[in-house]
Length: 605
Image (cartoon, rainbow, N blue to C red; front, side, top):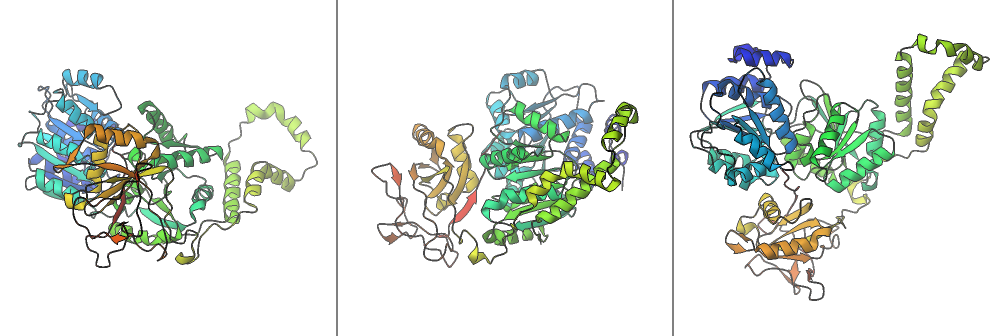
């Protein structure tokens, strides 16, 4: 393995790396740094989460920056505020010995005026989220005419979060002579499309195998009923007393509920989600890095790009909406050569959803049994014994009390004394688990408690929109269209269903009126078509075939067959909502009539 000095880095950078404790480069650093220093070719770089991508792209840029030129020479785009701040901080540390090099980080949720003032004072490197970057470009506050390097970090996640239009806008504002560096943990088709459209014969390097999970992470799953998800998390935490990890939830609401339950049950936990202010998010992350918080409950967007080492566990409260997201979740642990465990909680009918993830990460999930009360009590008991045994005695502090203490315990045998001390700490724990039931769900799928039926979320409203697959609509594009209406900063997007000529999406029911009003006021168009949005009733679940497949809407008792742009559900005259009569027929041929079910999180800056 080479050293950083052998990669061609100058002394000012090497001394900063030594101060930061960097000794030898990671595989992606070893491959990317000399490539960027010695070539102006565009670069596609694959590396799993936690392998040192920030240094891989920032060190060669710092090496070549012209500090005498105050124009923006490099811009680095990242999907979230946390990751942008993290990258900016790292670059400042890497370049601390280079006089005159300035870095500015721009992101939403912070004062755009402050960021503009910093840009006006001059900065050679800008790190930003796509939305705020586009805003500054449109205001002519960020000028990229002299740009030499454009870095797309976590490109897959930026596309998943609906930033495609913003990325297009930034890319179109940059000179053709720039060098584009695309770094990603996975390379879905959308990322490949970015590379085809905006990169010229890029060199491709890879650290590890594309779209796979880390070899340092054990992937495990537990089968439980829906109502026992939280109980399973408690038992997993209790059977791992030294757990230090992230619990991933699909929505902000689930995130808040799980964290509140953990806190109420006495765990050192907190939540990280989009409803928190930037100051609150920073405070939570500081406590988590200091290990004041043992378990962080977070949504995918909020936890994106967190740089926290030595995490022992990642727990998936529910499976992510996209298979690619599992790679990012599990990559939070097993970093920098450490080992970790990624746990998925699934119901009986969700077990089949693990197979596509296994194919993507090229790893097998190991089925585990949720531990019973006896197992947990045994582990906790000996953890307590170990803690007592390893406790240092401050004889000087307690010496004046010892004579009285010995008198109080006079008459107790050594065995009785040990039992009493252990019981003081352990009795409440033992009582809690003394009557604990087995919460594993080992019944056949057809006997599971939900009978294969979909559980509708009563907190979400369903909307009809008159565009579909034939209009080139995709879930990210629909999510972007919704976000463009500026309904509210915190609206939650649920399930999205794309059909041939129309589609459906779910939003927080508290914003029904705001959503309809926003679409009416903005009168948006999509691919030249005027967009119409209506509220529709939730589709009925189950029936007939025991919940098999998706069911297509019928109108006036007849089947939809695809067709013209007027295909849409009837409007209910009484409550301005729509209803579906009958069922949806699943296409056995796998043709265009099959419904695609995907859920997508909301774009956040």
